[in-house]
Length: 327
Image 1 (tube, rainbow, N blue to C red):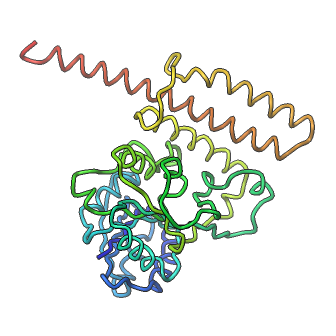
Image 2 (image 1 turned 90 degrees about the vertical axis):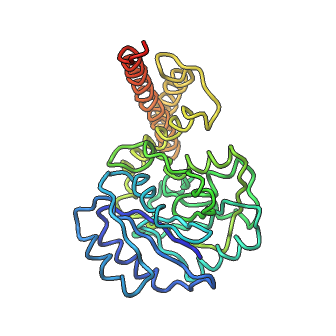
Image 3 (image 1 turned 135 degrees about the vertical axis):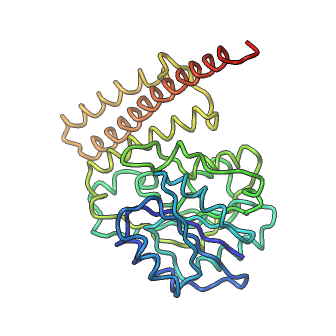
């Protein structure tokens, strides 16, 4: 059996369209279960979910703590079968999505991670700037040139992403869970909800397979085609990169005052490049430089947050040691 798991928060209108699309899925031979975790929604999400109980193999849960990974961890308690499939509440799967993932899992028993193709589903015509930059980290879509087969470790993050990934449930039975300190949890957060988990699995030697025929479409809303939204996304992306680095999932970097030293060099460099492109009236170069600058700025923001967390942890540990009866 396959269990599909997603978390949702205050997206009742989109969720209704997504669940309608799920009704058209071809069921895999082993059957499937659908778990949706309501992450503290205050809109009509509960009513929307209730309206699909008779149309889908739907099981719901409620997680009041705001944070996608809190919700996913709550949903993992309801997972059944040998394969957990993860997606998002703004994703529209093709009809044979689960059949393709089931086939790949059965044909590749030595692989425990599976990523599928993610296409953009444009709510409005793409803005000109979408031609100037890699859209993967902006809209969470995969490289259209990726082909079916095993993934090298350097491709895990770009080919296995939250809207379309599957993990063998045996991994979660060992106690592994998502890190609640990374990923969506309000308007400002470090990106990397599922990436952090995938990197941990990569470090322990789990292998990943790309399933080209397992296709979903990730909604790109009209408001996400505004440049200001993209630049805010860049900051969240940068924050996530530093958070992953801090956890040792990327090579360590030298710090100065809690901030990676290279940022003190790279931030002014990108700012000068952006200013030069502005003078030359090159909007494409300006946009790319601004994106990179905001990614760097996000890394610097998260570095200070991590440093503060470390100081608070050290103070707490020292206080506990003083209060210990053995001290």
